[in-house]
Image (cartoon, rainbow, N blue to C red; front, top):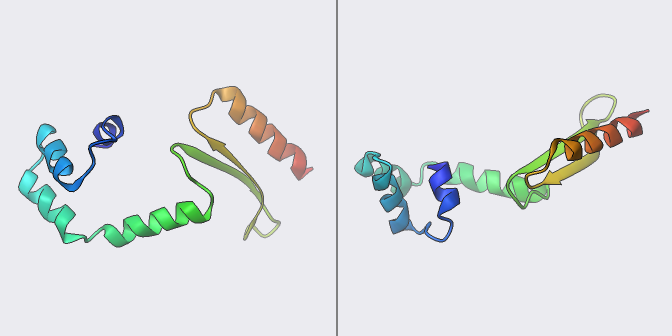
Length: 101
């Protein structure tokens, strides 16, 4: 479902969701009942609010950081947005490690 949604980002309205579920061979009645019940809506809203709170505005986003001495807060944070090569991660990690010294 994730891949289908990602590949069809312009067709994600309520009726479209049912069509996607049907195309994937899901139990459409159970799918519709789940979506319409809203039982997972609060969790989705919380995840969205948390991501916005931490400046995550795209997928994928990787958050790398160093915590303070007691591990309760991040003192240095680097975000890598989008699909990046290994070198970008290595550079970000090396940079974080150099600030730890």
